Length: 222
Picture 1 (tube, helix red, strand yellow):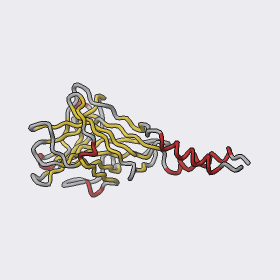
Picture 2 (cartoon, rainbow, N blue to C red):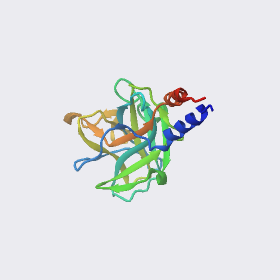
Picture 3 (tube, rainbow, N blue to C red):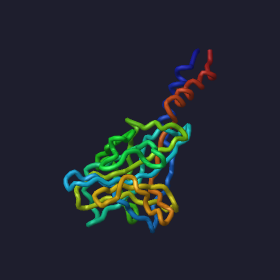
Picture 4 (tube, rainbow, N blue to C red):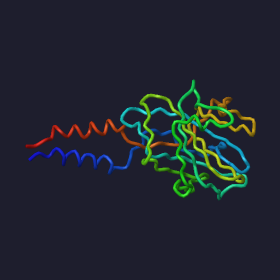
């Protein structure tokens, strides 16, 4: 009996039944980590964004979940976010695309995550977050540099910021025109820069999943 369809279906189900693996890990925060403003406020109003770069490899270049850490201040938690925006930019000569007063229109992808779906959870001195974007994933070109910005949508006060990772050096950049920081100014250049705390999970690109299914042809039984 020909079992091609059964085998392909089994492999397809198995591919999605397992939790998506980490495809990029920029590190978690530590005791010396700090937050950099990354907030959209349409009432006050002001626009600030912090962004960091990443490169994905073939076989793990489809982003289905985003995980990050943040902090509240002025006056501090609990915050009053209505949503979080996760923004993907192309690279423009070593920085994200766009500039003052708002680079967002140049983005390749913008996910707006309701606050309740961002899973804000106390994590040491900070908060951890996660967003499932598998319904509208971002398919990256393997080996190509991109930039990710994560931004709270809330009314001041308080302020929200994306937290730095423990790794030294880095290319993170920020824009906060209201305070005179143009998009995209390098963060802490005098200390070699900083890295932001986040990691990405995902799956192979759709073409790769198709190849997995086609590989089942060799198992065909008459």
